[in-house]
Length: 126
Image (cartoon, rainbow, N blue to C red; front, side, top):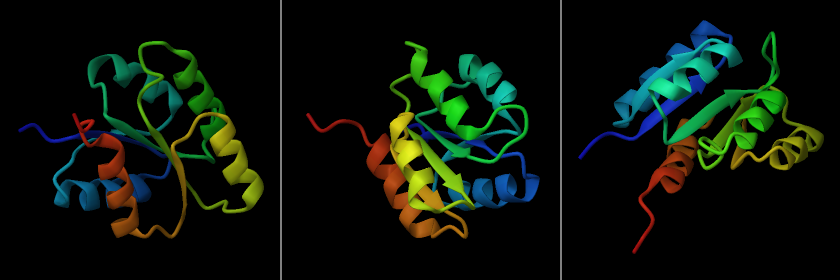
């Protein structure tokens, strides 16, 4: 059985590496993207089953990036989970508005995050 593929988009290298290690330990295959441009480029090559997306990034913020992914008919079905240091209800509401499946606030509860990712990438029960 192949490992579920997750793409982590965060402009902070430490955060990317920390998350990647945690998810790989849980049996996921992880690709990393430092920004939205890299994500868009990598989607064609490595279509993930879920995207973990930081809100605060240079060039394009997570909300705009999520909107762009959700507008693309080839990728709109990929669940996106926001990961952010910003945890107010307005940010969470915006996350839902642009199509995110969930919103986690840093510091992350890795167990909860992994559980949520598993829910989202589990093959649909037949």
